[in-house]
Image (cartoon, rainbow, N blue to C red):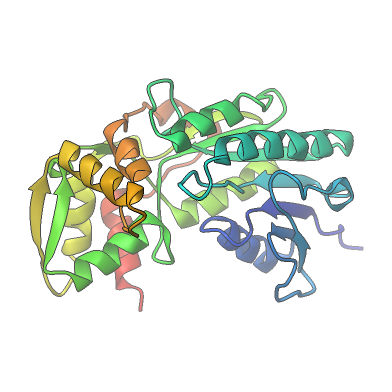
Length: 293
């Protein structure tokens, strides 16, 4: 008799990483509960959808019976969501409480942007939320820049660079970045759950790149090369703040710029060794992703 399928939950299942996790676990034969704002979804033998919203729609009965829960849901701060920091804190408290009552292991997806010098709401709030977890029994994964063609910063940059003649390069692209291929991330999360790994881990390439390196990696595989124009970070911050106050939509927000201003480099090699993983470098990952149809 075969062993019963393990059951995993994913909050933020409609998000950039969440939807890929649902696909991966479902394809591997796991029973998946996909938690998202609407319970509507393509239910299958492997995947069922549950209505979920931070902080007030976290139902304990939906957590019962899970082997593990990946907490990827986040409310992004903005003019329309000025309560986002409190929402994320209270919502995560409720997620943790429900998981503890049912003995469910937790995996929290954080970010390398979460550090004491962060000034963006996103970085500061992620750091606060991290403190709610217990590294003795939970896994806290602090992720670098996740690379994938299907959304995220990388996917957006590809479309921008291929569709524009002039592209602003904030502060000349000098910001430090460390990357993480989506495929590597999905494999790692599956391994963390399957092996019962707990602790706090920085997960990104040991090599520290610059934002300009990311642009160049995309352009090497692009049929056209736009003109990259260095723009002072202060000027971009002023413009993004002004547009935000005037409620004029912009692809670059004040939060984005504040996040860029406080990017830091981390020595990830010890944590990658503890996890037993090797991550794909930026250059080969970008070339592989851009070769996909």
